[in-house]
Length: 136
Image (tube, rainbow, N blue to C red; front, side, top):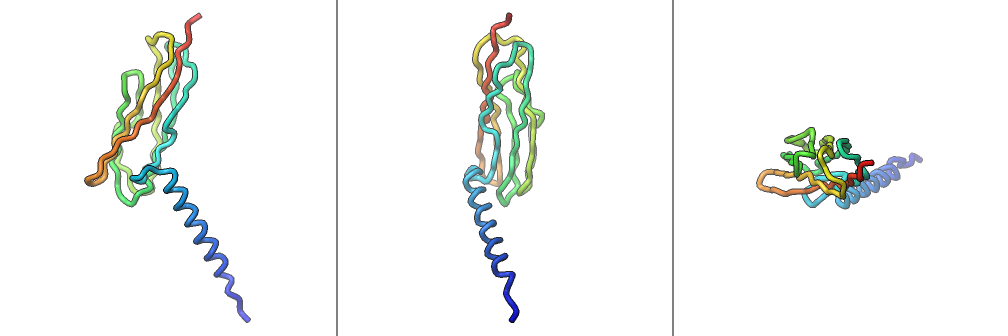
């Protein structure tokens, strides 16, 4: 008698697909875009120095998405200004914070992401927190 060995594999595969879909719906926003990290703690950055962090975007939707990256001030620079992301595309870009001319204190800088797909428009922000210590 010949056994149906493919049936357990099919059930396992369907379970894996269900788990992946559940993970996607929990991690992405309602538009299908996953941006990570959304909050970054850069710690203490001495005045006149800079720190960088990589941000990852994943388009988990079925449509193309236009992305526009806009730092909040001149001390924050992103190496990406615009991109067009196809479905399931991963895009990484670097954000650099420069503390040149900053007084000691605690700071927060924002990088705004503007997304557009057909008639849909939405925004997301990434917060970068850091402090500038008193110089010795």
